Length: 115
Image (cartoon, rainbow, N blue to C red):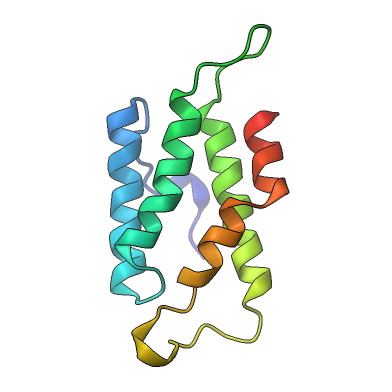
């Protein structure tokens, strides 16, 4: 097992660097044939727009940690909804692609972004 302290980390200190990290992840989903780049772009847009959103008076900006927790929540939801397996659908539809819009709309994800 790998020691988490020795695992490489990505620099997410700016919006640009964070966006690049998410793009690389989208390419991996595409290569694994799980989610298309187009569908993954919906996740990236949701997260990045939350990061750029101007907060209402009395509220703080959304943090990168919140984005991370929201992303983990979307991943957890997709995993729970695909317990029967992640086999490619007929017609070439990727197995997790249809779950992304459902995860993006989930109350649990919105709660993380608003907390």
